[in-house]
Image (cartoon, rainbow, N blue to C red):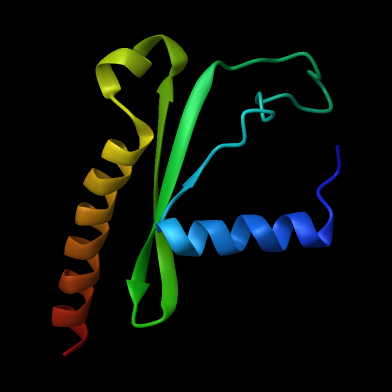
Length: 96
């Protein structure tokens, strides 16, 4: 299903609210050349912020088979958010 404008706006708002985004389960890694591909990966991303501006994102991918040992997405988000804050702090110090 194609993502409509209202659907995209809702995804962006939810991402801003929770502070991270996860890979849509309908995304399987398929391509035009390999439409049946299923890479069996989970993914999460958190922004590195400079004030209100996203300057980059930290992304993490892991195999579905490792999900039990990796833990819930929220726990991974907290870990990545902590690292994103460290990076943003480091960048601020370099610019100052």
